[in-house]
Length: 169
Image (cartoon, rainbow, N blue to C red):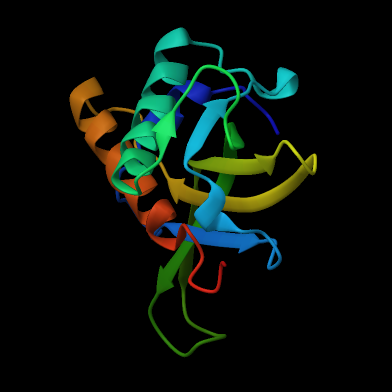
C-alpha cells in the first residue's frame, strides 16, 4: 500500500463518499479466548509520523478496551497490526441541458483523496490471520487536528462494530 500523502488519512471527514467498511475472519478461531493483545509493526506499513501512528493505535486501543481486551507489551493472546494509505483518485462530474445524449454538457474533474485503513489480528500460536477489518473514506485534509482525531475515532468505532464476529466461538 502507498504511504505517500498519509497525513490526510487522519482527516476522516464526510465529503462525497460514505465510509466503506468490510471485515472477514477465520470461522474456526475462538475469539472468546483473546483477552489480551499486543501491537506488532509491519515493516512495510510504518506510518511516516509518530503522531499518526499514536493516533491510530489510540483509537484502536479505545475500541478494544470497550470489548474487554487488555493491551500488553508482550505475550498477547492476539497480535494486532495495521496498514494505512491515501490514494488519489479522479472524480468526474457532468451536467448539462437537453436530452441525455444530445444536449450541451459540461464535464469537470477533480482529484480527491481516499484514505484506507486495514487492521489485522493474528493468532501467534497458529501464526495465521484470524480477523481483518478494512475501511476506506474520502478525506478532507483541511480539518483541524482535533476534529480529525474525533473523525478517526468514529471511523474506527464503526470498523470494530464487527468485532468479535457474531459466529465466533
